Length: 217
Image (cartoon, rainbow, N blue to C red; front, top):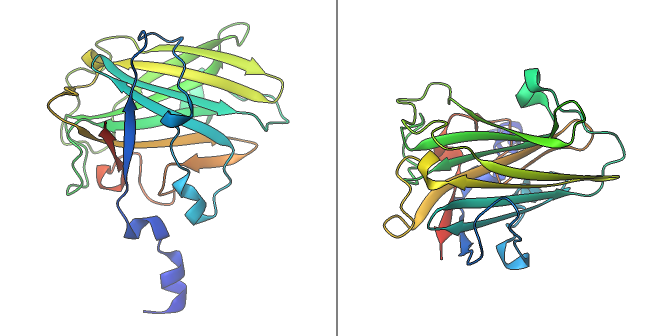
């Protein structure tokens, strides 16, 4: 195998990460606060990604909580309802069965997009649950319950929080299934992309074998 081919293989493709996800004991709504014990490591640094977002994830028997803080922007946010995947914001994927031996999403896989700014005054978050391309079966719970989200726009970025209720996650049972598949991508036209591990050079939007695992502790 030539050195050029080896150089093209993402380093994180050689590993499967299982990360602890702490239980959140507070009130479950979009105004939750996750301290540093909920912070995820930036594994994308092994792919020479620029780390520009603080990402924290917690679980509750009623659903999953995720928060993102971006604090180094110099340009204004670019968020468009008509161009969700190209807009500044958060995308994340959840597999309630943590399956890594298939390359097509199952009915237990979910894809969410959360933009920090929308509306006439760009002062409200926008949440969408999307169908996964080439999925074997769509989740039967798609858009069953609304995802609660809040955002705070600052002069150098934003803080975004989202609570995903278990009713929207097909197969969600934190007591029965203590491992879930998870991946995220922070998209920013100014700062680039930050992912949990494997970057956008591989089909992370549709292949759950490329996602990592969260251990609900």
